[in-house]
Amino acid sequence: MINFVPFWVPRPDHARHTDYAECLRLQRASCERVGLRQVVITEPGALPGFTTFEAPTAELALMRAFLAGQRAYLASDAFDADTILTGADCLALYDPAPVFDGGFDIAVTTHPFADCILNSGTIFCPLAAREKLVAIWDAALARMGERWGDDQRALAAVLRPTLEHGDHDRDGLRLRCLPCEAYNEAPDTVNAMIQPLVAHFRGPRKAWMKKWYSRHLRLT
Figure 1 (tube, rainbow, N blue to C red):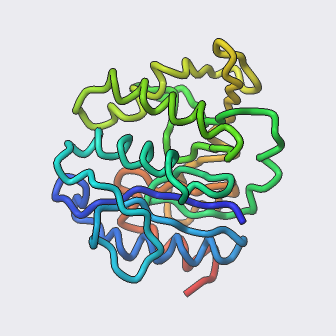
Figure 2: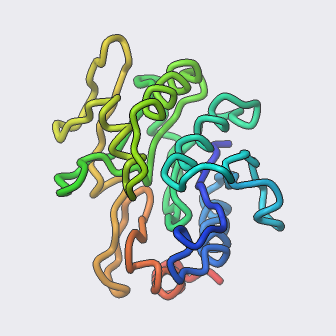
């Protein structure tokens, strides 16, 4: 079974008037629908009622906590299967098993966004590449700042992703770049039915994530 692993910690700068527990419940149901296992990276005792991986990140600024929590997961026994690192505002729409074909060490989604072409809402992490993945996160943590989005900018600085989708060599690291439209897309409106591997409700879309979910997936 593939792990679907969001990060969430209960902080004012993370909540932003969003009921993330509700988002995570919707996400868990979407995972069950396609045969994935949801494991939430969070701080100790922060999220009862969910399967969690607890990481001691309370003393870290939020962006650094994202990467530190992910790094701790990747280095741990909880990383026991191929994994998609994702966000609490994402839904799994399809079984991602065909993506994990053994041809990459890490796969990311890219799009010509103004701030960073890499979108960290869907990162494919094969179990067989554990050592390389931990090294990537170590390098990203060593160079990141504290602004919102610095987690994905730090990963991008290490990986050097491209809008040329396909497989690329990065000094022996096998990087695969995938289009957001097919693998990590955000619907423009609550009425927009999209069919990527992962639907990403970034930004203000979180306010109508549940309505979109009920309207298009017909789940409760």
